[in-house]
Image (tube, rainbow, N blue to C red):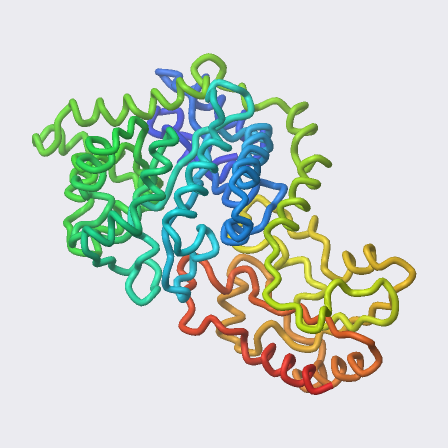
Length: 475
């Protein structure tokens, strides 16, 4: 379930939570290490990135926001919470509410876009959906609004880059969605990688204490992003002991993965660089969160195999996903009343994403199973029935750029070349198109072309697909 080093640290009481451990059996085994193997028997909290659904995957958050259907978005979080808690989780790293106004930034897909009003409505709705009205209920969990703050305003759209803006713009355009989450009672906040006024958010006392706690009245706990305390070392803030102390004093409660708190705070306390009261405050907030979700009453309350079997990928959740997809779809043009298509005749379904499972779930669907996806080809055949003759051709690779393909394939095969050369793929597509009454082109990005550490200098379709569309338009 966990490696020997993590197991020994759990038994020594040095780890308070885990993420990336999925499934009731694995979570129960890890929880037993803490409850039965450690001196204080404090239960672990288990979190994961549940960005747009859990194992039942919904449209990406940017897609959901295009519906402007706030009750539906709240319901999507409610459905995700029901499924995730059934599979052992008690904490989700969502919602991501960063306002994004530079389309080159790779993580645009995870938020609600550029508008602070819509972003705030979505933010509050998702918190309500995840947490419900009672965190002690079996089907609710702790939400974590992220990335606090201004992460979506990275200069030039380059992920992790610096952020520099006036307080007026900050308060008017970028802070409202975080404030909306706090007002909705969000249980945790994740700090961002970027700096604000020259000070990294992870160690920014004005941000995490003066604004978040004192002005906004936030009562939950603050967790860092992945090793963000450690990242401050390379940016000249000091050694691990120094940056860990700075983070704690600024208002950070939990160090995600970096182990700066674990390995240096005792020494900093001895050297009077931090106080016992600051350590106690951080511990108290995390313990309180565990109390609120009932882990001290029953550490295994989320580890019921019979509930997982009933809830995970259940028929009602699949139906919800279909509904969310329909409500989120945006029709940009319908020249000559082309749509809806007739359920008769011959359709040429062409494109590198027309018969593709690996990219259907979209970015940051970490718990979803691509093999559960229905390719567009199969879906259209099912809807069209016997009255429609559907012809298929790939037409082009998602990209012919080997470097871009390598990046897109970092988490698995998302861009597969061929079969055949680009010219052969195009020739097959044109021949297929000439045999049909109408062409349906299915084009777009691979799911990992944009994302964390994957910003784009050019967000247009890859050249391979632009060429395909241009040639299809001539037929």
